[in-house]
Image (cartoon, rainbow, N blue to C red; front, top):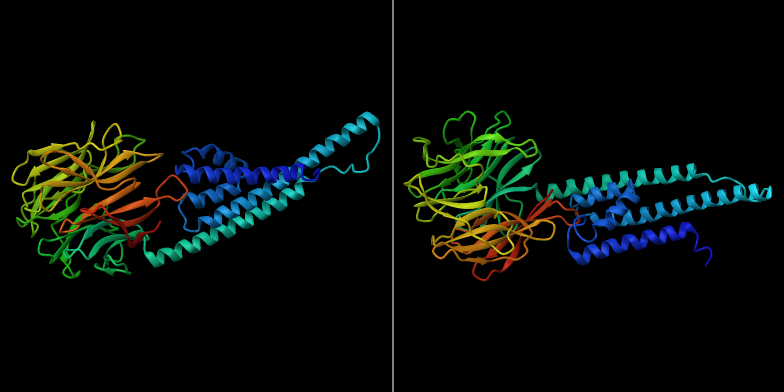
Length: 451
């Protein structure tokens, strides 16, 4: 028992208890690691286990699928680290006692060798460095393999006319390309032939024969709209480039025009804000790129991807105001808002936040993503708002951070991304979910987005 009471064993046991308690509290609370009840426990471990904890927590924070390896190594190396710290303390105490005995009794005890923390410190530091290099190499290799198998992050989604596949944009290194991917899973088919650049926001024409999308080349800092056949052939710009403007979110209308959003400023109005597109307005153009005309003249601070009603008479998007997000609905033959609405959802933040809104095919309701205040981060769920009564029905619960809402052509299913962070506080990995709007059944599609 006396041996087990030595600092080296007490320190090891204390680390095991603290480590296990932190993970147990985290698992039970369900809150982010550093924001919930487990925050102080993990903060203590991170400070006490440096530099081991910094490497391990970095892997956890970025949502690696092999996080369990980092957890096990953190626990094992951290316990070993505390064992040597306890052993070092034993040497310090023993050396102090021997000096005190010599001072009092003037004698030399048998074990008078001073502690040698330097050697143990070198062994521990060298072992920790070797394990850290091995861990980083392992995670880097596995992440690269997963990215080759599943592709990069998804940045936009739209349903095909038959509702059996989606056209999505995926990051590939510094570029983003368009793919048609069946909802049953699979590698997908590349639709374009550009070798570099950023492609996004694909939209089908009403007859399903053409696709409009946004492209930004590496040589041009602005985004422009391109049109191609549905099979990827006959790609061409919609109209000549506009200086100092970005054209985004093209939508085919049944009146033979293409509506799109134009941003004339990219940057920030505050040194603490991230750069983003601002000064937005909605424009229309003929299918051949002629007769470009503005529908709005408001220079909106920020807008969402627009949605056209099935009958081709209205367009809707959300804007950011001092009172929070608002839905703006315009008649296509007028530049004045037809309806301005601000749906309210349970536990919403002080200023409502919407992350996309879409007309239902019958034009009687709106499907939208709206934020509610969860634990640590906002939770974005899918809601349906009746346009006549303004009543709101919740369709999903506790979806976490969700983005890129889109609706199938028949209006029976919605697709969106749910982003997760298994251990950290920032969402880093996405998976596509399909929502049956009648039954509210939510199923994961075999299409994932990697880091």
